Length: 441
Image 1 (cartoon, rainbow, N blue to C red):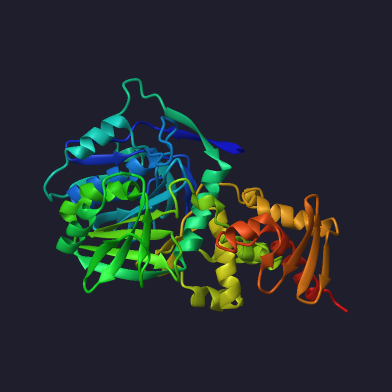
Image 2: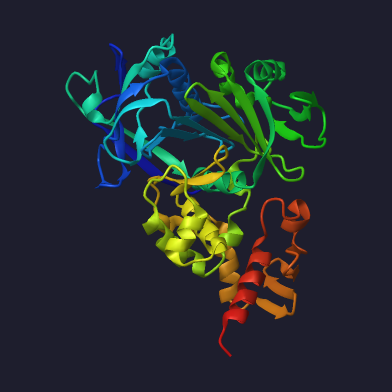
């Protein structure tokens, strides 16, 4: 497994003391430009207890490896300030669970807009666990707000591996989530009853089936059902139930198995997206490949990227007007930006949001090996087109492809039948067919 190394350098550790929470920052991009230790916000968390519990939940997901648990590296959460909220995001070490806390209950000064890593260390976690009641808590995102620093003032440094599989997961989550629909909405007491009825074991599969205004558990899929494989993977919802106002469950059209669980809290929302199986991370789903395969997507992404300004909601229609692109090309460009960590997707608002994760956009092709392999097949002349049919010559034999339907005679297609994105042979055939149409006569 290939991987990069992420280096974090903090001016001091994050800390909570005397009613002041200081989150130390490391690197990032803001409207004012790149910063080593950016400052984004100074003011009050008007709902301190749920915010502290939610931040702990995000940090817990960053530390977790739900499939084959074992000690390992933890990646620091990412925070984005977009002017009217703070979004804290993390991704599990196994690549199968994505967490985000959207905090809107803020009262203070927005110093800048942008994205950065934040330090969540052991002592801070213990302090956050002791936050009680609903009294406001002063929050600072940036080094000037730190209430406790190391005795010698030394910089806190961390280096963690970022496997390719883990990086790709961020892209696949937002693309998959964009295809989800709201399946059920429960009020606070109903949410508590349902979540507490889930089996406590981390393994096994259950289905949540709408039943009137409630959800009931079933052993198999039903109309409008949402799959939860590995119920233990949404365990970070449980400590938040005492604050729960509502629970929303999202799933894809049909019987797809990925799902998202959104808990409405006072002044904030906590969202978990879980992959189809505990052993199956989001990185292998391949849902971004069709949009990335177009020659125009990279250029469109550069144009759309310039128009983004850390908005809380990215409006496709407005971007289409400003860029002169069609809405379909704008959506494809947003997918390309997502693979570089530059946009996420908010299910509650049904819109993308702008953020800048510290990943190199030039790594996009490397993060999608099927797309790289497909382009290599085209460049080597391995694709022969005959109308809607194509033959792709590979080292494993001749593959027959139906271009429009996206079917293939390779083992990958027989195993997954499109549920994890197109195989490299279908991608190669479609790239070749597109090039044939676009070639001037």
